[in-house]
Image (cartoon, rainbow, N blue to C red; front, side, top):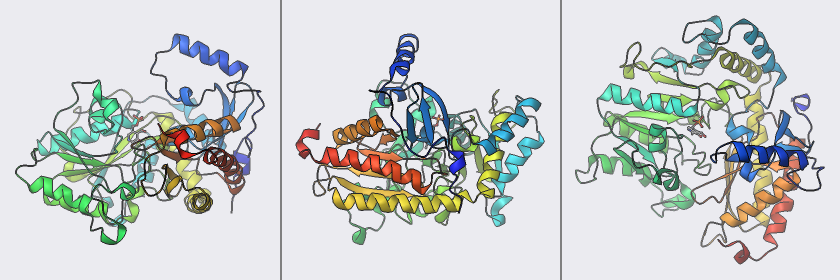
Length: 465
Ligand SMILES: Cc1ncc(COP(=O)(O)O)c(C=O)c1O
């Protein structure tokens, strides 16, 4: 088995500055704060200026090394500056960078590779379109295509959803705070419950669950007093990311698709975060025996962080023509080459299997931690998309965001980076590069365990918001 040692800058964290941020980082951060707008977000919780990064390790401007369990928001599936992928990038950038949507062999290659992931018997039913460079662009394109196809306006999205920040994408994103300052979001959007079993909106236990959450879709579609008319589309993440790494119960996705199909509604699966081998499968929905009408992709598709996005969709929804969704940057040639490199790397080194094995190893370590720390309410994950939900106690399940904040601060000060999400900001989210190995996991877990131990030594009231 490959341990990918040479693909990482180091395998352990090393904080050499007397305090973080270190001196150089502090200066660069101060400049950023002075000159850049207040929307700068990530350095607020992880205050470092980055010098370089390789694999799962980031070196800041002061020479501190951080284990990166965040991967640039789930982008760097094959690791920072992966040398194998960089070869593809170097070759392409000498040859051709920008070519609008003219075909090239490079582009054809990536399209072929994506198509190889569609089951052979339905492969010919599908098409791919490259969208603008970001995930939100793919979401916008998917929604627009569904509207084109159906001639209808509305979209159904889910509690806990995150689909991006552009107007349409934000309109189908559930975070009330993010939405509240914009009065002109796209109208006719409705939110319904996702399959979030730890906090079941229908108060069901596993034994009594009959997927009422999915049936709720049928209920609102068929009830003349539900308050909304037939929508163009339904959009959902096969595993919710920002919503707290929420993995739906088996059968949920299938049921949603079946109900939507029965009502002639276009189904969009947003695979922007959970796709591109993050779960060990190319698409996170693969274990569900169903296939949506449109799939959105971005993040990992650009190999090592080159921006690109695409929609893969059934020909039956193709209702627009040349120029109906035009754009300057749709399928940058270097991003495409990086995507091709990432596909080859994943195939050559069997990264999908590695992801499953490392995911199981990390989940096992976290389950052990849960056995000792009662404030860990649930550990859930698939492949290397893992969430750890914190509560003040397992009976009340009261969310513990302050505890999570403190654990994150301690981990940061010891050299471990990760993101936080969830409905109540009480879920620690691990999205490490898929090429992490057991040594890196063990080192990260040492930091994580010590931070948990320190925080849990305090009475729970200390961390009540
Ligand atoms: C599931 C999902 N959809 C869409 C997006 C938006 O992608 P971008 O930030 O590239 O616009 C994200 C970003 O985190 C995401 O996680």
